[in-house]
Length: 370
Image (cartoon, rainbow, N blue to C red; front, side, top):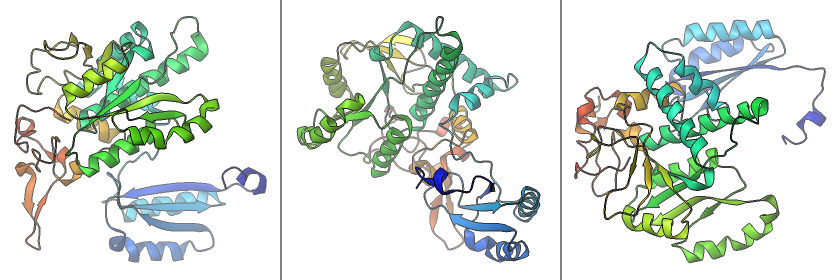
């Protein structure tokens, strides 16, 4: 449809569109919304669309009209009607990531702005020192590496835009490989989120490689051969087992990898003395660990994700504040409350104020996964 819409659309007809995002259920606003739609019937098309799997809003109200001023009136009236439920939301946060992320850097009065600026500068230095083929992003679906991936994506977008004007000064690059190490007891929600992230950040011409599952590789061989003329790359790698053994196998398969981006923060177990660039511990596969988020706090991560409308794993909205395997991870008891019907429920992870309690939902406190 999108391929032919420009050919079937009347070029002389201009539609104006706006959307409003609300945090309440559609049933709660149905009466007021119906009255609003009736008032502007024939002038503005007003529709509501519930969202069942969104981290930010529960219903989107869409406004369409041929009259810009009339649409504006309807939209402003809806803002007044539903002011208690409106949330600022960007439905396409990845498309122009560099604009929004680098805009945060200009908020010099905020701690988050300072930390984003410092992390971006560090990432840019790494990207200029190493080629994308020498780097990998360690991703496990957690909040920290989700923020990290978006920072790297924004830095690369920024470099790409600079390339257009100063190609002789900026080294071109693309998003490094992504490594997802899958345990035997991974949450299904994490699996779904990783798939979503791969689709969002890595192009359709990127190939997912699962060396530990030969049947998977064989099943996709025909598809890959059919699209080989489109320059498909091995960009996403899924290895099974423990982190140490999977990393050893990955580096054995790809010895050109020199550095790994990680979402480690100082408050993580055993990380309080870590530096931004450090080789892995003795006894582990040797690789340079690159840690752009070391100085970030728990609230920094959540403020970053939610201020930019970035997707994150649905488990965090169910009260999980630190995610490992299904055996050692539970909702954070500090977020527990009793509903009006007497059920036990949990507030979302981003509402946790006691940052020192981030990992009390984990059975093994010395475990760092997200």
